[in-house]
Amino acid sequence: MTAFHQKPLRTQLQALRQCHPVPKSAFSDGVEVLKGKQIVILGCGAQGLNQGLNLRDSGLNVAYALRQSSIDSKNASYQRAKDNGFHVGSFEELVPNADLVMNLTPDKQHGPVVNGIMPLMKQGAFLGYSHGFDVIEAQREIRDDITVIMVAPKCPGTEVRAEYLRGFGVPTLIAVHQDPQGLGLAWAKAWCAGTGGHHAGVLLSSFEAEVKSDLMGEQTVLCGLPQAVCVAGFERLVELNVPAAQAASFYQFGIEQVSESMKAGGVRLAFSKLSPAERVHARREADKLKAAFRPLFEKHMDDIIGGQFAEGMMADWAKDDIDLLTWRQNTAETGFEQAPPSSHFELDFDRATGLVALFAAGVELAFEVMVEAGISPASAYYESLHELPLIANTLARRRLHEMNVVISDTAEYGNYLFSNVATGIVKDVMAGWDLKELGEGGQFDAVDDATLSLVDEQNQNHPIEAVGASLRAYMRER
Ligand SMILES: NC(=O)c1ccc[n+]([C@@H]2O[C@H](COP(=O)([O-])OP(=O)(O)OC[C@H]3O[C@@H](n4cnc5c(N)ncnc54)[C@H](OP(=O)(O)O)[C@@H]3O)[C@@H](O)[C@H]2O)c1
Image 1 (cartoon, helix red, strand yellow):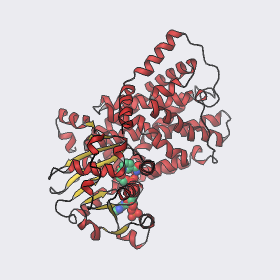
Image 2: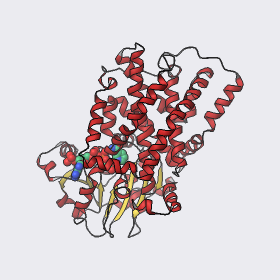
Image 3: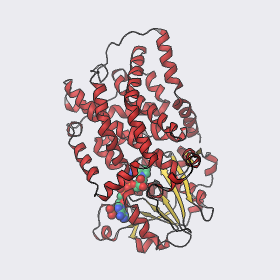
Image 4: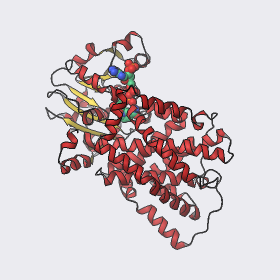
């Protein structure tokens, strides 16, 4: 049982609910408090490299600490850091002089990494994370004099860099776990400003809320559902005699375009792009999907809150990732992944009522189940609807392989856990669909005005729509 579970229910709920949009004016000092400080990033992977590039471009001093073996062998991490002109050193060389150590190694390595740097860190230094799993689920003990903060971008590292280069940023959660000097929030804000996150929108959260909401989003609607839809949906199209490359292309690019539309104007915008008859059909299919999927979404949320998910994954770490590696191999062998390369195409929504129904169901359900569990609606919005196209971009690049490489190891494990079951559910639903829902469109039953009006009200009145509208307005503020 973790410290979170030992807290009274009300205290647990208070931590889960913690989530306040930080006004843009709170970032008027930018990166000032970190100017002249030595920042040492542990690991030069997906988040490490991209956050480091942004921080350096924001005028901060960044160096990379890598394992001695990686330096000696000049491995890929070493090359990435060196090719980008960063100073690279061992933990022993760099950590003792660091004011802020950012731990951007994979979650499963946090035990040896953090235990290893405890004796090296200077008195009163800061330790940063981009995900709270180690602190909350693995219950890491950190020296009392060290300030522990989090800056968690709500997307893959590649998008953190891409958005920064566009002069913007990605929505980010910040949190302070241990604050002996009372400076944690100021440093977290400066780190966040250095990545560009303050341009997009920042939520002041807690380590507990970040972990539980992040795990839920990535396991279900963000990664697990797209994976299940690609695998099951490809098989269905091939059954319907669609050539393999075309079948793969429908999902590889279609999911990105449906989710981009939802990000721009909510789930209701994606529905509004359908004709009245298609809209009613898509809503009905989405409701059927929600009923079929609800027990699985609830199980994932319950296991995340209750700690069973963390225990299962840590047991797999102890078995050298046997489950993760088996699931990764199985995914690589699916028809979708093996299909010939497919070319980009512009999705005609009228031909994709099935995709709209699937992702409307996934987004609404993830949001509902998170909020029912005590997670704040704003956090649930970012962890479902907003982040979906940022993950779908990776799928569009090089299918599931790319998505699973770019997301964290924790996200990848949870994704398989969900999609292994969800693929069967999607197959069952799609058995009742044909090309009318999946790529060709066609004639749907005519609808009367009363039915259409009820469906439109249902689409507009889902609680995610109001939260989304206000957060999108906040993100647009300059
Ligand atoms: N990926 C995402 O999309 C994402 C999004 C938000 C938050 N996060 C969080 O960001 C953190 C980093 O995740 P990531 O996906 O960016 O990690 P990652 O790409 O897998 O990190 C790989 C880097 O960590 C180093 N590393 C691995 N094991 C190490 C060890 N035992 N000691 C020292 N260095 C080690 C690797 O160096 P070697 O080459 O030497 O192995 C490599 O440079 C995690 O807490 C994750 O939850 C990730």
